[in-house]
Image (tube, rainbow, N blue to C red; front, side, top):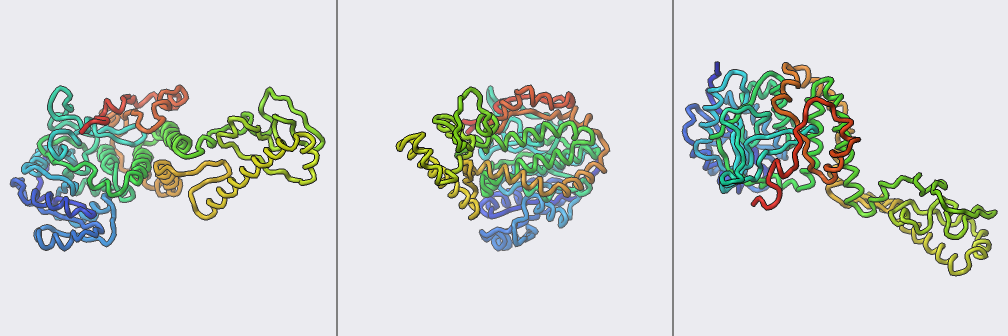
Length: 483
């Protein structure tokens, strides 16, 4: 038995997107009759491009809601849901162009669906209508997600495979979905702390866990200027959101017992990605991967003779008193520099042992290293992200985004624990049923993922259940050259 839809509220959040609204709002005004009344709500999300005044003048029938600051996609849509008059809410990105029959297709699909269907998800294509943006999504074991077939052509021998009309989906895309307002609110809506990205994956999991389903409405098509709005955030700021929100999603939604078994692999992946970027993407980063007890300090290097005089100084070519190997690969890779000579009274003994030229060279090397270390410490004290005694300099923005994600998670453990408690308290369907329908995926995506995921050590931490779908990134979506 299906529940009727009596009125629909179309919710659009826009941040400095007036140029997109010049296409979107006329397309909404030109929609075919969906068979029920509908309203358009627009949140001007702290824009500085004159959006609010322009909408009032050009589209007076649009219900304008204003925020002085950018609330983000999630909190912004939450505000529109609270203001909505419809018993169903259609979420639509501001950088889209819905086809004339878009809203009618969504309404028909939801009205005809059984009572346990809380939401329907439409299809998103590129601006020209030639390639797929979204039809079906999948979630990875650690909370990331993919649009299957993204950027694949819609026609031809390599055409993207589309779900059947009415097929079950793990989540609806937040840029083209219709959801029952009461179901959305009862499930907690979009998590406002996400700001943007993966909020729809999180919501979909909560709806399924609460005993409600999501289905596909193939004829509800919108054209999308992919990343046109999200590019305003900056690539690396989006990276922070992806990594943080993915972890939040799995930490909240994996059921008790399963989360404890999945967490080691999730944590290994998060740690490995952060470490890999630190080491490979920053000047001197290799120093962070050194084992100081593998021949770098404390006389741990084997196979070298050592003559120590009364002063404790090592002989030529051997270790110094600080345990640093002169001229070794470890030093060039950024091992901690030796301290300069502690006592000037040792200089005559050193001169006799090394001779004038060799002693001068050693002293010059030590002074140079100490100056570099002091400069690094001074830069760090001044607030630069930085160069320390290891010679490592944090310059890569991907690494910064990753570290910020980790810092956020560590700083919000209590809030996350409470969110998990609330989510699990309303669970009605176990994950074994949900993940049997929609198995998590294992897809190497970040630098170093392929090596990690292939290693026996990582595999040892993956539980036997749920079974993961393993794929390469180019098997999931178009990679490069996709137009």
